[in-house]
Amino acid sequence: MNSTKSVLTTLGALIVGVAIGVLLTQPPRVRASTIFHIQKVTEGSKLLVYDEYVGFACTQEDCYIVTR
Image (cartoon, rainbow, N blue to C red):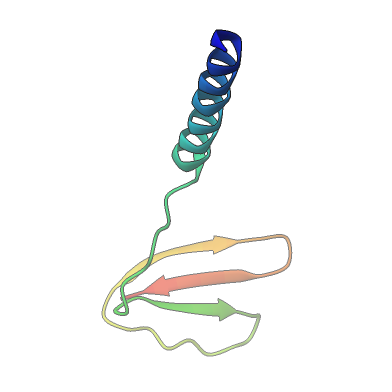
């Protein structure tokens, strides 16, 4: 009886430990405010620049600018 109780306790602790580990390893979610505008930039395109230029980023295929 003691061995069954010990196995169940160990199994329960393992399940709880894995669940906590999964919750803690998830990356945080970030949401941009609606005041930011992201525009895809292509060669020769006209841009709508708002009040403030925030930054830009490029991938292998596309480039984007962020304005506020």
